[in-house]
Length: 236
Ligand SMILES: Nc1ncnc2c1ncn2[C@@H]1O[C@H](COP(=O)(O)OP(=O)(O)OP(=O)(O)O)[C@@H](O)[C@H]1O
Ligand SMILES: [Mg+2]
Image (cartoon, rainbow, N blue to C red; front, side, top):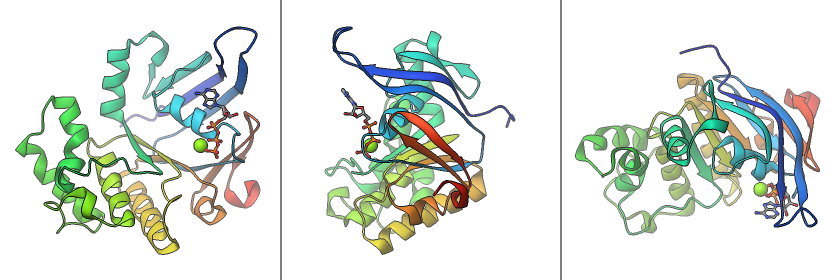
């Protein structure tokens, strides 16, 4: 594994609006470098641009200007198909609402990212899905319909799914925002353990200071600017 940063953003700007007169800039030139193995919290008030920044890093949205490299690849020159491939092979996602497919089994849901790369659900993907389900404490749930699980369990399935393609970096937008304290502690523990054992980079958007404190590095956004970057004791 190389030492180059996994994410490098330079002067990233993002504007929304149909015409030059109605354009509003919501990210005002963000510089961020994320190294392999980092566990990073992204905090800031509602509307400060956290999700917009995460979606650009995650190749779900394109910046209006600035440069972004992911795993050493400058994304500016990539076609949508190449972006989709890079996203599928290198990045994982966890959202506040897990977006599981309720009519598929838990195991099938976990296999979906591999199916997306390979073009079909394949039995050969099952053993890895099973290992991941064991990691999140759901090893005995693979055959249940996803829609039958509790919210906390579904979010743990979503974590297993995010790890399916062995991503170098996982982006989590308020992964515990919808969970009780016990379930969110459990989710954070799973992410931290995977980070420690596998050196996967995590970026976790959160409003909860107790979640941010569990991350060695905290980025703070206010009004589309990065105003803090350092250990939690300095930034929170
Ligand atoms: N698709 C869009 N079209 C227009 N404006 C948008 C769009 N997406 C985000 N914005 C605006 O960009 C700003 C930043 O939004 P963003 O969702 O990134 O904030 P956030 O920090 O994630 O907030 P929250 O904590 O509420 O999730 C807000 O003013 C928002 O209204
Ligand atoms: Mg948001």
